[in-house]
Image 1 (spheres, rainbow, N blue to C red):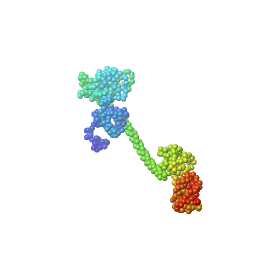
Image 2: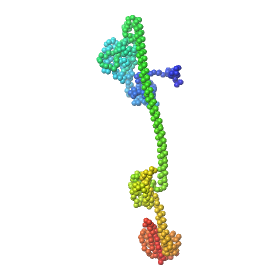
Image 3: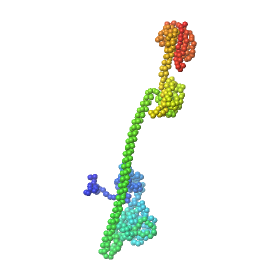
Image 4: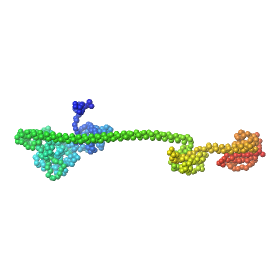
Length: 605
């Protein structure tokens, strides 16, 4: 700030340093009303387009393209874009909104009619003002103008309204109105009037509009092509005799060039005298009158200018208030957006917290699930979980050895699954009974591989004591059943041994292979082997070789369940002596009826 600005002595503002003022030209420019600049390298128009409607924005972007040199740059505000005119500008920085002019050779010509005056002469129709309907509608403008010109002598005239907007031009107006080349359109006569004519034209038109009377201005010095031309100007209100109503009043501005002869007649008058209605015969009175008239004209011109400035000031104040209102709305919107952003951040933080809690719960659930799976797998218990519809929910790996299950069977009904159980096909009925009665069941079953299981069916209860299905568990009791069988056999053997221990005849117990399992004292006396040696022997060791196959064949028939009556045979004692005997054979069976051993009662004869 200190480098490029200096503080005003009264402290009321800042002034740009002279070094910058010498380099730059500062001027007010209406991008909507004023003609555009040309051959610019950079246009910086930031935060203006957002205050304009869409139609104005569509007009300004092509104007910027026209005003820039080839390859020139356009710098817009952060909330502004070139919109649908991407074919006119290339985007260099989308975030900073920096664009570069494209050379578009087939682009439509820029409509400059809103800035350039009309070149129409004679039969040219009344051009329409930008965005407005011609105030004279369909009136015969040519005839109206020519009828009025009959009252005057000079052929140069312009039909205007009280604002100076030209509707019709007649004659060679180039001497008095400086028309720029280009497309024609509605223009204001004040803006195109040549030097020496503009001020008096403004005053005269305002006076005619105010008084509704003819106003004359004589001896005006108009600069044309470096020379001055003397002109008499008349502003005449136009009377419309057709009876048609018009939207505004019309005035005919008549410009008459003063010839040398006319100048000779008026040489006693001051060349600067304007706006006089009468001429005095006395030169001094004429001079005084002209000066007074000129003073009044200047006062009127100043008053008109002051009114225009006040009007412009009011419009600027109104625009400023609108801009302030829009700015306040934008600030309010920005605050609402900030509030929404904070709320979203708060919600996001809450969601992040909830997400973290859910992740922790998922991790805990995963650990519990893993613990349960490892526990079930480690116990080796075959378990199947089913729901209240008897559909499979999950199962342990050991269950696949008993029931033909694969991972894709989850969700299938139990009755669709084939089991490896022998003689048991009421699993569905028993599971449904447990669901109905909530009473657990325990059933002994046997698989095809010979393993025996204790199957237990019990309700599946949640922590809230809700029944959500049943749990079917298979406990391997093969070894237990085998131990129970061995225990029963041992008990039977013990009973026979106790019975045979006191018997006077030899008592032998052997298995289906002929291995001796029991040997009483009478057998020791008859054959010579004590009990410890006999328990390591086979019944074949007691049978002579010539009858050994026949005797062992009888034992095999007894093991298969065929009965044999008492019969005589021969045994060998410990010394190898042949001893004739008579013996009876009895099969030993368990609780299932299966023969597990053979007992013989032998007597020496």
